[in-house]
Length: 161
Image (cartoon, rainbow, N blue to C red; front, side, top):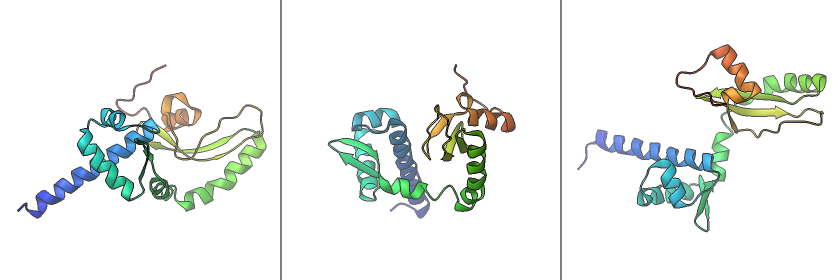
Protein backbone atom coordinates (compact mmCIF):
# COMPACT_ATOMS: atom_id res chain seq x y z
CA UNK A 1 0.00 0.00 0.00
CA UNK A 2 1.47 3.40 -0.97
CA UNK A 3 2.31 5.83 1.76
CA UNK A 4 0.08 8.95 1.87
CA UNK A 5 3.01 11.08 0.76
CA UNK A 6 3.51 8.99 -2.39
CA UNK A 7 -0.20 9.10 -3.19
CA UNK A 8 -0.23 12.89 -2.79
CA UNK A 9 2.72 13.29 -5.13
CA UNK A 10 1.00 11.10 -7.72
CA UNK A 11 -2.17 13.18 -7.47
CA UNK A 12 -0.23 16.40 -7.92
CA UNK A 13 1.47 14.95 -10.99
CA UNK A 14 -1.92 13.99 -12.42
CA UNK A 15 -3.24 17.48 -11.76
CA UNK A 16 -0.21 19.00 -13.48
CA UNK A 17 -0.80 16.78 -16.50
CA UNK A 18 -4.47 17.79 -16.62
CA UNK A 19 -3.50 21.45 -16.57
CA UNK A 20 -0.94 20.78 -19.31
CA UNK A 21 -3.78 19.32 -21.42
CA UNK A 22 -5.94 22.42 -20.83
CA UNK A 23 -3.04 24.69 -21.80
CA UNK A 24 -2.45 22.70 -24.98
CA UNK A 25 -6.12 22.88 -25.93
CA UNK A 26 -6.12 26.62 -25.28
CA UNK A 27 -3.17 27.01 -27.67
CA UNK A 28 -4.61 24.69 -30.32
CA UNK A 29 -8.18 25.94 -30.10
CA UNK A 30 -9.30 22.39 -30.77
CA UNK A 31 -7.57 19.16 -31.65
CA UNK A 32 -7.73 15.43 -31.95
CA UNK A 33 -6.05 12.98 -29.62
CA UNK A 34 -2.91 12.81 -31.78
CA UNK A 35 -2.51 16.59 -31.98
CA UNK A 36 -2.94 17.06 -28.25
CA UNK A 37 -0.62 14.14 -27.50
CA UNK A 38 2.01 15.69 -29.76
CA UNK A 39 1.67 19.05 -28.02
CA UNK A 40 1.80 17.64 -24.49
CA UNK A 41 4.17 14.71 -24.91
CA UNK A 42 1.68 12.43 -23.14
CA UNK A 43 0.84 8.95 -24.38
CA UNK A 44 -2.55 8.67 -26.07
CA UNK A 45 -3.86 6.28 -23.39
CA UNK A 46 -2.90 8.63 -20.55
CA UNK A 47 -4.19 11.61 -22.48
CA UNK A 48 -7.51 9.91 -23.20
CA UNK A 49 -8.06 9.18 -19.49
CA UNK A 50 -7.25 12.79 -18.59
CA UNK A 51 -9.55 14.14 -21.30
CA UNK A 52 -12.40 11.93 -20.10
CA UNK A 53 -11.96 13.14 -16.51
CA UNK A 54 -11.83 16.78 -17.66
CA UNK A 55 -14.92 16.23 -19.84
CA UNK A 56 -16.90 14.76 -16.92
CA UNK A 57 -16.26 17.99 -15.01
CA UNK A 58 -17.05 20.25 -17.99
CA UNK A 59 -13.48 21.52 -18.49
CA UNK A 60 -13.24 19.85 -21.91
CA UNK A 61 -15.81 19.16 -24.62
CA UNK A 62 -15.50 16.49 -27.30
CA UNK A 63 -17.32 16.34 -30.62
CA UNK A 64 -16.45 13.68 -33.16
CA UNK A 65 -13.02 13.03 -31.67
CA UNK A 66 -12.12 16.72 -31.56
CA UNK A 67 -11.48 18.21 -28.12
CA UNK A 68 -11.74 21.84 -27.03
CA UNK A 69 -11.77 23.74 -23.77
CA UNK A 70 -15.19 23.49 -22.14
CA UNK A 71 -17.45 25.98 -20.38
CA UNK A 72 -16.31 25.10 -16.85
CA UNK A 73 -12.80 26.33 -17.70
CA UNK A 74 -14.32 29.63 -18.80
CA UNK A 75 -16.37 29.83 -15.60
CA UNK A 76 -13.33 29.21 -13.42
CA UNK A 77 -11.23 31.62 -15.46
CA UNK A 78 -13.73 34.43 -15.05
CA UNK A 79 -12.93 34.56 -11.35
CA UNK A 80 -9.35 35.68 -12.09
CA UNK A 81 -9.89 39.31 -13.07
CA UNK A 82 -11.08 40.35 -9.66
CA UNK A 83 -14.16 42.47 -9.90
CA UNK A 84 -12.58 45.19 -7.78
CA UNK A 85 -9.83 45.69 -10.38
CA UNK A 86 -12.26 45.76 -13.30
CA UNK A 87 -14.69 48.01 -11.45
CA UNK A 88 -11.88 50.38 -10.54
CA UNK A 89 -10.42 50.78 -14.03
CA UNK A 90 -13.45 50.43 -16.29
CA UNK A 91 -14.65 54.07 -15.88
CA UNK A 92 -11.12 55.32 -16.65
CA UNK A 93 -10.90 53.06 -19.70
CA UNK A 94 -14.26 54.34 -20.98
CA UNK A 95 -13.25 57.97 -20.45
CA UNK A 96 -9.94 57.46 -22.25
CA UNK A 97 -11.63 55.68 -25.19
CA UNK A 98 -14.21 58.49 -25.47
CA UNK A 99 -11.54 61.19 -25.36
CA UNK A 100 -9.15 59.60 -27.88
CA UNK A 101 -11.52 57.55 -30.02
CA UNK A 102 -9.07 54.64 -29.70
CA UNK A 103 -9.62 51.21 -28.18
CA UNK A 104 -8.33 50.86 -24.62
CA UNK A 105 -7.12 47.49 -23.33
CA UNK A 106 -6.48 46.20 -19.84
CA UNK A 107 -3.82 43.50 -19.68
CA UNK A 108 -1.58 41.94 -17.07
CA UNK A 109 1.73 40.13 -17.45
CA UNK A 110 1.30 36.35 -17.56
CA UNK A 111 4.68 34.71 -17.82
CA UNK A 112 6.18 35.72 -21.14
CA UNK A 113 2.90 37.06 -22.52
CA UNK A 114 0.35 39.76 -21.85
CA UNK A 115 -3.10 38.50 -20.88
CA UNK A 116 -6.01 40.71 -21.92
CA UNK A 117 -8.64 41.15 -19.22
CA UNK A 118 -10.92 43.80 -20.69
CA UNK A 119 -11.36 46.16 -23.64
CA UNK A 120 -13.33 49.29 -24.40
CA UNK A 121 -13.71 49.74 -28.15
CA UNK A 122 -12.83 53.04 -29.76
CA UNK A 123 -14.88 54.83 -32.38
CA UNK A 124 -12.22 55.03 -35.09
CA UNK A 125 -12.51 53.00 -38.26
CA UNK A 126 -9.37 50.93 -37.62
CA UNK A 127 -9.72 49.01 -34.36
CA UNK A 128 -8.05 46.12 -32.62
CA UNK A 129 -10.42 43.51 -31.25
CA UNK A 130 -9.20 41.45 -28.31
CA UNK A 131 -11.15 38.92 -26.31
CA UNK A 132 -10.78 38.72 -22.55
CA UNK A 133 -8.48 35.82 -21.78
CA UNK A 134 -6.50 36.20 -25.01
CA UNK A 135 -2.72 36.12 -24.67
CA UNK A 136 -0.38 38.25 -26.77
CA UNK A 137 3.40 38.34 -27.23
CA UNK A 138 4.90 41.05 -25.06
CA UNK A 139 7.17 42.43 -27.78
CA UNK A 140 4.55 42.55 -30.53
CA UNK A 141 1.72 44.56 -28.98
CA UNK A 142 1.35 48.05 -27.57
CA UNK A 143 0.20 46.81 -24.20
CA UNK A 144 3.04 44.31 -24.11
CA UNK A 145 5.60 47.01 -24.87
CA UNK A 146 4.26 49.08 -21.99
CA UNK A 147 4.67 46.10 -19.67
CA UNK A 148 8.22 45.51 -20.95
CA UNK A 149 9.08 49.19 -20.50
CA UNK A 150 8.08 49.20 -16.85
CA UNK A 151 8.94 45.63 -15.82
CA UNK A 152 11.94 44.85 -18.01
CA UNK A 153 12.46 41.93 -20.38
CA UNK A 154 11.84 38.55 -18.68
CA UNK A 155 14.79 36.18 -18.74
CA UNK A 156 14.65 33.80 -21.69
CA UNK A 157 12.07 35.82 -23.63
CA UNK A 158 12.70 35.43 -27.36
CA UNK A 159 11.97 38.52 -29.40
CA UNK A 160 11.32 37.26 -32.94
CA UNK A 161 10.59 39.94 -35.56
